[in-house]
View: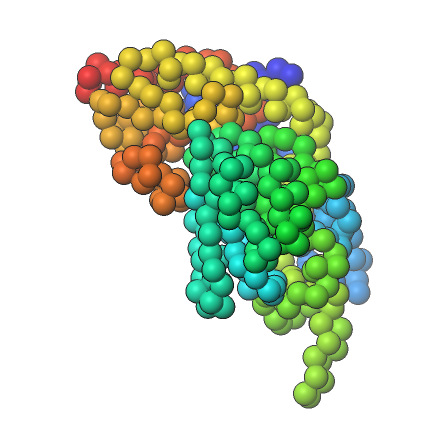
Length: 392
Ligand SMILES: Cc1ncc(COP(=O)(O)O)c(C=O)c1O
């Protein structure tokens, strides 16, 4: 793949040709095809779905179903197992609200707030014990998982890739361990879906979620996958229009999954954009994307490693690079990098318990996608040298 050519597919770089965008873990940039798909929906197909009987409404409904089919195919699921949500956060909240189970909750120390807080609230409300899998060298510790997952565990919520450390966690082993103890697993794939092929049959997670806006799709799109037999028994999260078979004076019959989890008018244009995003990713190939982002991330890791006074927090080989410096606060580093046209995230990355354990000031985080080039890393290097000149 040719990242310089790929970069031309992204209008934001026509408007900001010198931008080294290293903040894709927060949100990715959007290719022309995604922007056009959203525009096309509003220009040519706009109507509500699942309601109108006229041609325009039928065409919008069909497009929405096709988008769901595309997502299902992308992750090896059935369309009924795919619920459209706003983002990963909504998927976690939906599940924590709707899925009832016996037993305790196991979370990880590295969990993003959107994973951590809904399950913490559930544990408080339902008086469930809550235990944490610890982090070791930027990854979930298997030894710690073996200590906290046991016959009392009902649900294990883990991240495939941490947004702080960027390394792939040993999720297959943890999922196996959870299943041996009859617990179900929710896999947060927000940081893996952008870079690697996810197949729910291989991963064997019972539930999985990710955000469309991190996989080159539009904002306000996300996915909750759930095994059909589990989803069928779940309570709807929100109730209202578009998710019922019948409503009588004192009786309501909800639709089956996935409709019962999508009350109200959904983000129809977003679904059009999501389908276009997946088609775009597939046209490049997920394995090529993984290879490319790993290569650029490795260059970033080496660059930080070689700079005096800087230290990588992410383990070697991680696909997101968090680092800190003895010279300056992460926010000051990000400010200086901004002067060099480099966009990074600085702070605690919505994972405060984990980041506080490493450093109260937080970290600087550089994250990549298909459009990043070696020149982006050279700009980062110049910016880091300037940080040393100014503060060192
Ligand atoms: C690992 C992880 N989980 C969940 C989220 C939340 O995603 P969203 O803000 O799209 O809901 C993020 C966002 O950065 C993340 O990195």
